[in-house]
Image (tube, rainbow, N blue to C red; front, side, top):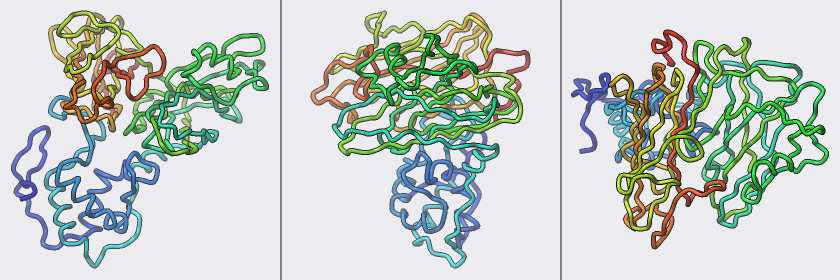
Length: 449
């Protein structure tokens, strides 16, 4: 027996009375499931390793699809949907799962199957506004099995001042691009960066940020630093770009502007490669009304870290052969409206939970019972969550630094924690990134779907 035939109703699982059709059609039955649950990642430039846009794509990966469906590996959605609900959840009903498995067991054969590409809903969402694509300068990856951290800049070459709706990062080598932080640099008309003396890129394992800025020629000839807008886009494995409603997000951008990649982390690779990741810029016709802001709690940010054994623990450190639980707390000082959250841990992470306490009430934010380093989404709430001054965010993380953890990068285990320089894959982090807007009356009633 593969799966019981159940279906989701709100948050509950109830027995389904639906009976699987005798004849399953790819176009009528299978393609709609792929469009709803799979294609957002399974595109040529999506987070998944292969596309699923046609009958040919589906049939050639039939054995892989059957395996990951059978064991509940796909679609990947680490967050507990009984704890909190989000926009565009990567979940599939048990009925749809059983339908796919029956079609696969029949050899994926039916007379009306065609080789036409399925409607790419993910791309349709991305292309609902004008966009332009920039490609990274060719970045060499040494193939020495070491982490690499680089900083560089890309000129936007805009014909005029304009409005940007959002920016998306599309990695070239998904298996080794660990994360990308993207900032916006804007120069006034008369000022120019010192381009003639700048380096193409800077190794962030060898230089601090101030030195890197100088080597990249970011300050002007007079030594002035341009206006910097942090975190206009970020990439982590599985991250997606969404267009938010009601004028939320977006930027006014001067034509004399640059994107600062600060920084891009390449994980260890044994192959010498050249990375040409892409940046997609989606333009807007209207000026931004409510810009997004970022709150980083934990590693590299604010908040108070303690562990459940010895009290205060700064910086984060997990001794060898230990399973340790840590708590982060952050008091809210001004009214904010939460758009999404992005939990972050590395290979020792096992469990992540975050909630807020406000006026005695518990507000769930995110719970991941089984942390998966490969899928680190920005979880966008279905409705804005507003927090007032005095609210406290609590974050719980469990880390397993024992030999029983199959993802432990060290055999035998050694003590692992944060370091002052850029974090390698084998270091450890405990962080919650929150994107928010300044609170306005009625925000809690705004849908983000």
